[in-house]
Image (cartoon, rainbow, N blue to C red; front, side):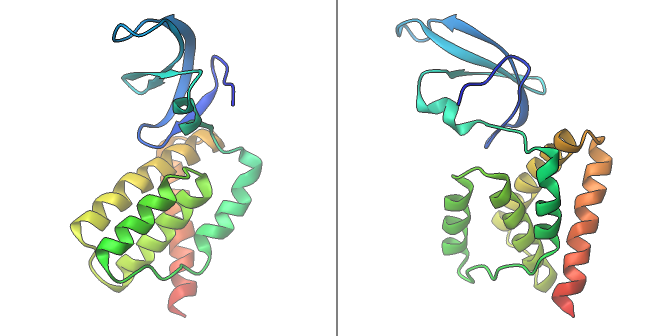
Length: 166
């Protein structure tokens, strides 16, 4: 996918950012190439335009799609593997897809796991990172300030908890 200057994008590791420009650069004595110059908060990242690296980017979820994700966050969670090693592999495999749907599902399912028992340190850390990415993208998509996006997502998950426990 080709992106343009000003596009709001999501990177699986950096979260929500903006395409600042496309520029030619010669890095590490390789041939000159075109790079997307991305801003993620105070961090600047260069991703090559002409390789698969840019395919890790996607546009921020469109606001018209959020009703689907509101329903998803309130829906019955999927039971995660009880073996923490297998669970971690499953989740990492899902995250490799990088879709907003997967992010919502992982947050819903790990949150539901936390209702039943204390999360392992790895699960808690993963939930924190993925949930933060969800909040940031939710805020970017809706145009809400981050605290309002956090509140909306939290309320949706709490509604799901009521359904789950009944």
